[in-house]
Structure formats: structure tokens, C-alpha cells
Image 1 (cartoon, rainbow, N blue to C red):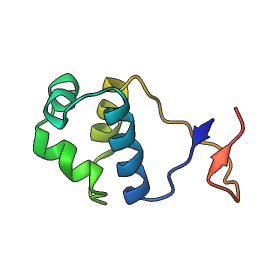
Image 2: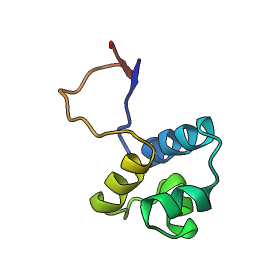
Image 3: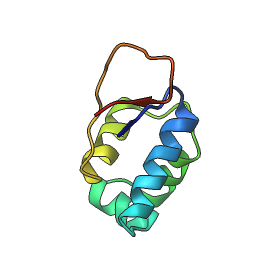
Length: 79
């Protein structure tokens, strides 16, 4: 199942959940992405000023990718 994020808060929650599923700390994720722990914290809290480059680095560090698809009405897309 693919989960959608339509705003910075939802994206932050998805990143936090993915990090926790991998039993990683914010510091470990930051180290892996080449970012500070504080940056991971801001991203996970839904900071709307996050740069696309930062988001992509964090997603790559979590072995995730960004996909752009037509907007659906629900929060989930079929696999």
C-alpha cells in the first residue's frame, strides 16, 4: 500500500513513521542523509519551509522515493 502526503505535516509524519519502522534515531537518519538531527526534527514536525533537496535526501536515506501521481480522493493508492 502506498501512503499519500498532501501537506508538510503529513509528509513529516510519513518520514517519522518510516524512520521508527527502521528503528533509527533522528541523529542516525541525519547522519545517513548528511543532515543535522535538528533538520530531521523540523522536517518530521511538518516545517513547511523544508527544501525539496532536503526531503529527497531524507527519503533516499530511508530507501524511499517521491512519486508524482494524479490526485485521488482518498489517503491511499492501490499498489
